Length: 137
Image 1 (spheres, rainbow, N blue to C red):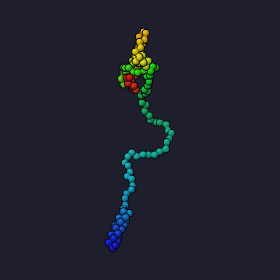
Image 2 (tube, one colour):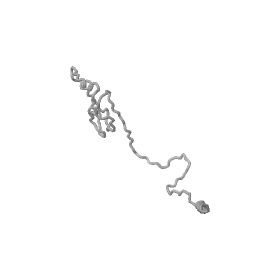
Image 3 (tube, rainbow, N blue to C red):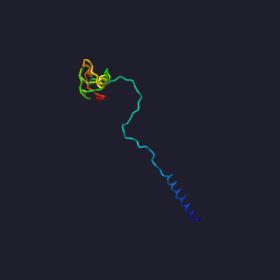
């Protein structure tokens, strides 16, 4: 029992010494000041400009034109790639209508044979092809 009390007293002494030493230590909790650009805070004012610069520039707004087909069907062939320059009337796509696909699946022959079901989609203005959302088929 005497041995346990000696160990207990030594442990208490060491713990109290650690607590006393840690409480007396001085740590610097200040944040270092940045050496960046100095900032001056002012109130807004309304004054006339005495110096100004005139810059000549041209502003161009991108005109977007979405090309849509008036027929439902499947894309048979794409004639232009993304980034190609396009003129008015250029052939962009060739679409095979759903009706012509149905007729070819049924092996029906039309009387005159002139109905191919291929619709050509042409550009209505000049520009650059920037997006193509569908692939052939």
